[in-house]
Length: 371
Image 1 (tube, rainbow, N blue to C red):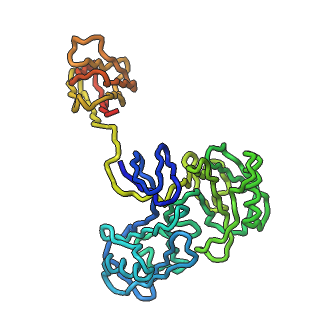
Image 2 (image 1 turned 90 degrees about the vertical axis):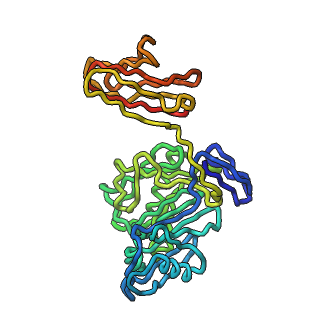
């Protein structure tokens, strides 16, 4: 299980763990604490002057791009590219990971930790060569106290009856449908007003969840920003629905029917050690019968195994698996037909063997768990 230390001056609450200032704490969860991105292309790189030699990068809440001019040359190594980036930025933000370029955002606050890489159209001609993901209004990687997301399309918006439903929710609210006002040139501020109005009517909360902003990554164009309130000093989640959400293309925004598109996390937690995560599964074995007969299954660790599961049972209609503990004399057996499952708690007793008798062709999966 990993350990983290809280470098801020106030306690941080994450799940069931409290991170008091400047004290190391252990948790079952891997907590995202630093934004980073790794290129998909491994060394070497052919860099051509004036063609693919510029990389635009920005971190956190910086208001200007760092323009990295890569040294031109054939078969440039990752180490050479990394040196160019770190020299241009003025500190170490780039490294080589298995010959690929990795960028890590400096941690400067407990509010936002993010990596921005401009697109080729914005002037970042080296990004594709290095295999780095690029973005427009949104960072390519972020860790933020407040969940947020920006539309990639800027005003003005052509809103019609075919694209005026925007469905979203924040934190524990129900899905909210904002009906955008129809018009040929709707501004971001007008779209934002529709969203905030729908949110207040649905929740009774007058706080804003939508804002008209000018991302520094784009220029002077105004975009729609969505931000989920922070609740209980620990949680902020933003959901944008896919099904029935007709405004997704209009705004150019991500969506998911079940999972949040942005969640809160804490940039001021530093991971101090990486220990194995808790994995309750000891083993998982498929037992297959080509014909009717008997097979023996031996528990791999009778002392450690606390739960035994039998699932994914496949056998013909009317046929059964009869499973005995240790010996066929221990009756009655556990009987399982097609698609049935069984779970046994072994906290208070142990055995070492299963005797599996089948009346026909089939298979089942046996899983041993610590807990």
